[in-house]
Length: 160
Image 1 (cartoon, helix red, strand yellow):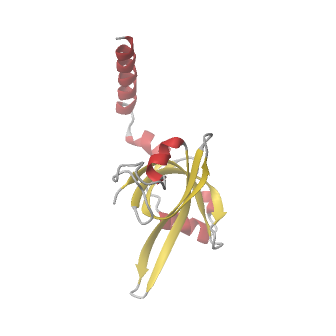
Image 2 (cartoon, rainbow, N blue to C red; image 1 turned 120 degrees about the vertical axis):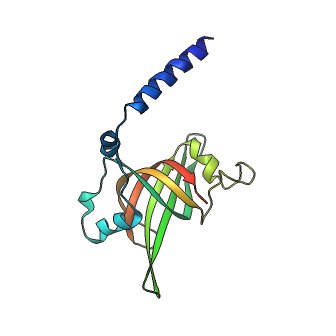
Image 3 (cartoon, rainbow, N blue to C red; image 1 turned 180 degrees about the vertical axis):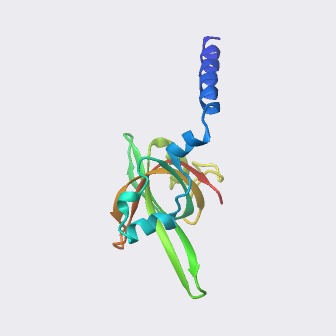
């Protein structure tokens, strides 16, 4: 009974906070306009200092690589390459990438390479389209030497 009472208090407090969030509060915490293309343009144009590093960003793209950096009892850390592309005329495709690090055992259910540990709708594999909530950390280089953004991922959802 005591647990139910505490759960109701927590639910009430959270509901009140969510209802009090207005658009300007949301805009002060989240930059919903950022895309992989816009992030790449900041690097290409030398405007790295104009990146919204204090805000959460919501981005989508296709998983093009997954690297497990730490999979021990002490922690779980993965790095995901997220890619988005567009056709330029009819002959050229331009691609944009970011690297996203997810830290914590809660992400293991999405990116674990072992068979049978995830429900099929949860498992995120290469070529999956995803929606991610992240924050910009800094720039880094990919394995091929391309300068890209490194992000800290907080939430991920498989779209298809």
